[in-house]
Image 1 (cartoon, rainbow, N blue to C red):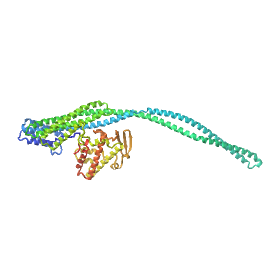
Image 2: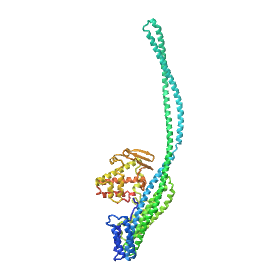
Image 3: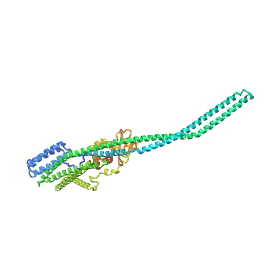
Length: 631
């Protein structure tokens, strides 16, 4: 994705148009007029039917050859012929400059991806450092002291109660033993009484009398023994509840002492885990800081080498175009001289604007690097780079303003094409807004430089819990599934093919959305339609959370930043915005998908090309990253 907001549109077809205007000024055959004629024919052949631009290598080769021929022809020509050659030479130089401008755009896109990775790394640095600080602050010494004191108290109480239990147990055992012995003696006496009485059955009364008296005496002894056994049992029964109560107390104290041991072991494990977590988080933060420094170094290299070279080459061509346009404007009969001056100055203005906006993107990231807390190891170097970058941005804006003013002055005397006027007006508005930003003035919401709606409303966007963040994901995947079904039903093609048919950035957005849907991996669209976040199994630990569901191969992960939970997107490291901003943007994007799917279902679009273009227009309305995608 390229960050360029406006682009010069010097295509071979445009150059052929300029060639036609130039030829109209040539009224006789000469070396110069022949050079102009040859140049126009070559440019016309390169543009062909105009349905598609020629390959880069072809355009560069033709532009270079034509520029050489025109330069030679212009040097030998006079009057209107010379002006026509210079006019066409200026347009050709602008075309050559655009080749380098495209290269600059490609480098800017690479830098934006690096900036996105840096922004993501800044968040990870902050999280890792916070985790390390929290883990390092864990101190269990006070709790360990309290547990140790409680263990001593429990041991003392348990010792007393254990002694009491032992005494009661001995007393109870003695009473039960004595009662058992008395009962046994009583049973023996009563058995002896029965035996003696049995011997008297064949005796006379006189013979049985002494035996009966003896048996009755033995029975009376047995009854007394039985009463003594009952008394002892009753005494034991009185002591039994005390014994049971003390036994329960000792058991409770034993469990409480074991719980204190477990608490002590858990605190020891927590302290060890905290030390390990602190080390791991610190090591991770150090690696992140090293990665950030490496990525910033790569960004600086790209800016100072590849990007600077591309812009310098483009501006050199634009400068040569401006010189040729000035030569063309010296001929009073040449009406195209001023238009060439305007076009060259506009190309220079747009190039300077692109430099300024690219620098502004880097400035935003550098400010984050310089101010993130805790501070990064190289924060001082990031702060020192801010002043230099701010000066570069200011110089680029001043150059854009100066060149734009010259372009407007040149176009004031000619009838410029509507597309050119629109470019001038757009750049004028953006430069005016850039000045307001520099002065901390408020921008109108419609300004191209104003924060987009999804960014302004991010503070109040959903995501207060990981469950609500997952609900957002489920809603988005349901919208994608709906759009996929609508495209298949109406056009017999998938969503990716329909968006690609719309042309432009749809060829990139279509496959991206198709790969993101129509649902969570492992879940069918029908399953998505019937479940909510509450149906998942959640594991929330601090600032991270995971959600699992039967059939989904990998846990869905979430991270909390501030008071917002956001989905951990696998591709976020390459995006030039933070995860929470991406979450808000995706909500807006999925809302656009939902609306568009309904339009496809209702037959709003006559074919897939119109449907694809309609979707890209909806994305352009979101502003921000998708602001340049509309048709």
